[in-house]
Image 1 (tube, rainbow, N blue to C red):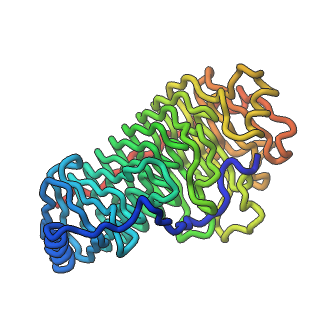
Image 2: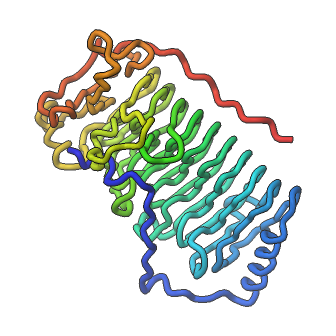
Length: 411
């Protein structure tokens, strides 16, 4: 049972193998000329520049790197301006950005050797109508992250799509003030992941056909701890893809069939979503202690317990009928029968005993599931799942709504 979430705490990137189907073909003379001009634009860019990507499929074999603030990279549409890195020989990323006030929009990045679009240490980042895809379908040879802002502030990811990542399709990590909206993530291990980030709004997205739909994670030993995420008005449906992540990564043991997973993150509100047909569970709430690396002492200041989790007004259907892994299957059958299913919410049952008052968390730190028709299964992780039980009144409570994320207006 301890295999169901993670095998390691780092986002380790395994090297992409090369096989007979990935032999470098080289670029045509026209592609070489286009790449040379585009590389020069990226290298010589100045604040206020707009780098235009014309319609067409443009074969590139080297990473595009941008280090200038205030630049926009714009194509003719994510189905029209396509940067193909199928024969990439230099640099793992497709596009790598170290810049503030950066916008990328209306283009596609396909088949990069590593991450598709990576943005480091930027403020005021806009990603709009960008498609990042590995066209071979789910494969360990794909890049880890499709859309990947990390250590950023004021992040907007909208109207974009991520397909085929071996880790997370849309991943925002160690960042602050984030909006992820109206995107589509499919055929990834994790559709959308918010990790160790503060103040994130994730809404009006569709995640389907991933291993896990939307993940809100708080990991130890990173530069900041996450808090305050809202997940609402999303369609999180049939995320039952077999896990194809690289071993040692944080998502390698996420069970196929996970809708929403909240791990060790405080102040999370999940509401007004359509969550259906995720065959392990529609929602999973867990602590650090259910993971494979729980014997490692986490960094100071890290709280391994999920607290202040508020789940309400969602529309659940299906799901929990065929959990991933023998232990989960056995638990489901023993409690609910061969043709039964788990409740919509699973909780690992670990609590911070030092924070308890009269045997329970203070009101502001509780796990609350408002709706009377939504059951919660406490799997009794602290006692190795010896006494799981369905909770009802124990979780019937409400928490104050979290505030909306507001990003600064563009100049």
